[in-house]
Image (cartoon, rainbow over all chains, first blue to last red; front, top):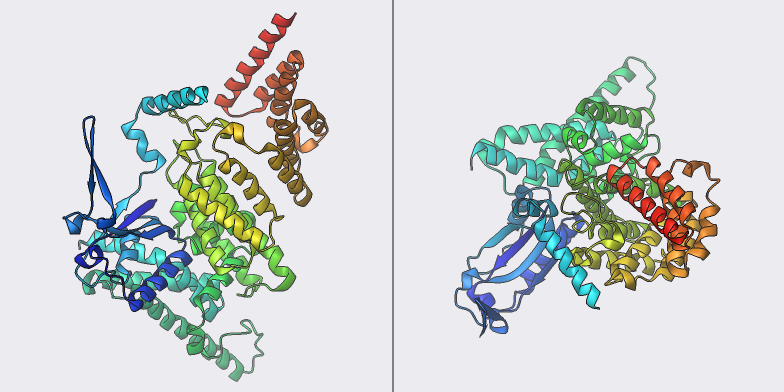
Length: 142
Length: 426
């Protein structure tokens, strides 16, 4: 099963403070371990939210809001995609991670939907069938 | 943490550490079976102590230290016994010719090398293919016998016995715990790759209704492949196999329909293909090719898979390239099934008239006599050429040969369509 590992932002990360060389080296070594164990699928660090934007949805309206955003602890500063056999294994790997921040911070572990996970919310297959029809229409117009 | 949560955490630690643990121990005791027992002992000790004392800061090192103490005890004990025998005047056969002379030095050696030794031992040619698969999943994948049994739809005692027997065979054959060198490496490596791909296919052929353990085999195989690619970064075929598996796995979501029916490659919704896995697959393929391995059997199959992955729509598929790649694949791994695939690609690239002779040449092939895809492909080509009566006969024959009910229904439908087209033409 796949998990997304979300490194939450801190004041420093939002201020664009770059990680120390020591920290980068430790993280590099950690990433290497993940790759060697066949766990790592992907991983990226994110710029502070000041370089980002949000689009707010309300009915038919779309409002664009430029960063930075206030609720620092809810923001994401980086992520990994891992393939492991259980949530416990993901937790165990996260515990081995070098502390990514100088301040107190959190790392969140979220399971990625798999094919079979979609089945309960689409028991009749209607949604997928609809998607197929839509696709056939789109392709027909090409 | 509750007791069961701690147990689950210990389980997770063990999964992460067990292969390294067994590999490190096997170098000391020179016996994979014994190494696994020692690793299990260390796990039992952890299960006894950790719920009370808490999980140590570095659980992997703790397990390794615990297990290695026992391993060293074991080696010392067997040496003492050996000496006693000598004192008694027995001539001792050098049963374990190279017990590591310096145990402490042995402990600090590179873990990667140990893992590689373990991979090659688990996939050793003295073992049957089934035994290699079971042992690899057990020792390197960290799967329990019960999980292996469930994944392969066999009773648990069968798997347990298979593993016990495999370990005994390795001990009796005195298979050295080492990485083969020179020319032998290529041969032995192909056995390792075959085992991994077999595990992958076992998972890939499982259907949506199956126990989740079966599809999980794809992930296990992928993980083993990725680990091996790190251990042997200069071996192009390892990257070729990883590329092939990544690209095939990228289609997992698209290859089964809402009610569990299989969807053929060309009919799949490409929007459901996992682009991340495709990118990883293409990168692995590029690595294989950069290492001069473009013509390896796995790299070629990956290159074919990559042609599909790169096409945004089925109509954009580069069939001439696929046909050329199949031609190369026939050269390196001649097989009637590959020939048949090549004929299909050739037909897609250059038309049914060009492909039919290739298929006809396979009609006398005894190994394909009962293979439903031969008449199915031939029927398809004949139908495209407007030879409806012949096409109908072939499609009906294909329907009678397939064991898959859904596929049979589809084939019979197509046969009926041929019959209708034929009567209209009359």
